[in-house]
Image (tube, rainbow, N blue to C red):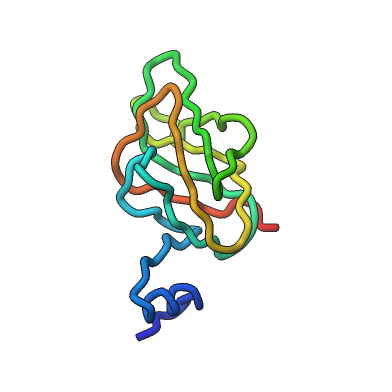
Length: 128
């Protein structure tokens, strides 16, 4: 049965019994920041995205994230900034991630921090 807002790719994947990609914007499931393989995602709308994730950062360190989209690294690491204005928060944001509409393989690598297992969220900030 097709759910409301189900994309053509989701419907086709279910019919073929194939793996459904994570639909973006939205949660990227229960995974860690450096999975053994890339995350299979389907971006519904092109634009600049923000990734929200949980990470442990040592005081004084500058946490960063390197992103590989479809086998190519985005320029430079992206600095993570706290998602909340309270001490001890484990939520961080990586902003300004350019993604085009369609299916992609996304590989994430943390620098100067340790990502925690759990959901990550990609949200659309600026549509194209």
